Length: 339
Ligand code: WQD
Image (cartoon, rainbow, N blue to C red; front, side, top):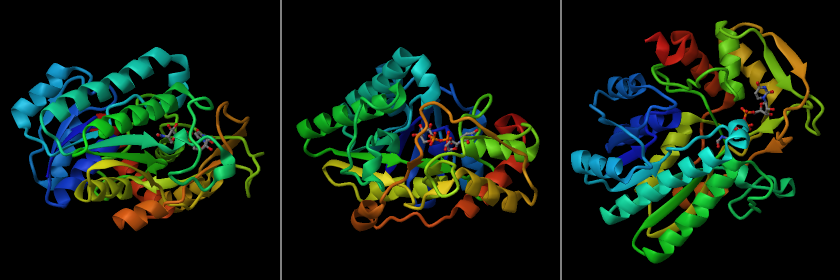
């Protein structure tokens, strides 16, 4: 298969590119580099030994997407990862989030369908699930665009748009993959999570404290109704996540399908920190802070449908993820800027 990865030079996209090439497929990256760097694309070539083209441009621009097809097509599939994804930022910039996260889908779908792709894989999120009583979340659990932030709402609206697209293109496969919390890095330590500025997410924050570029870990609340009082999340190793995309592409059937990509094993903030201390071989400074507005006590999935339908199950653990995150961060203390 030849696959166009929109947003492909990012954290998850680069790992999918490596997994596709390792499985004997071809990958082309399309990215506006708003949240990554061309160094990440070069690293994919270094890991795989295969030249991976990078088209720099806005996936919301039909002309850019057409140019990617003209220069590097035809493509069997598009994987759409080109979105803004910071929950907190989305509450401050709703219009930017709705326009970017929907316009990219519209352009990629318009051009992709016109150019004959067989499959459109959409990067969605487990934050579309809205009722904690449904835990562990299955693909049939309640979703809502009322109880979450513009980022999650934009993802849910995308799913509705793509379901209607699939209805009028019966030969097209549309696969929605709802990610839980991606963490970790490729074993080479050449690619990894490199958020701009102060990380919002826990794992990159912890790894920067471990490498010394941040002072201490702030734990957002230890008074939740959870075993140790801190938030529970379903941390999935990004290599497992990437392999889930390869399997979904290889087994794509016409029609619309939704899969949770998670481990089904909830892990607390303090448990993740302890795992990272084991990986880094050092104690990390921690301070308990008030809860972060918008956080939920727990979110994790039932990954059974992907196991039954795709034969895919996450195999790496939180210790594997911390080991690999530490390997990436210690080799790249300034992320890709270390290059
Ligand atoms: C995890 C836990 C925090 C930072 C994110 C994205 C969301 C989705 C999934 C894409 C929570 C706690 C965090 C810190 C902390 N990604 N925490 N101190 O909020 O589950 O969701 O990943 O779809 O869009 O926002 O992840 O890593 O921010 O938080 O105590 O400095 O760690 O309270 O319990 P979250 P997170």
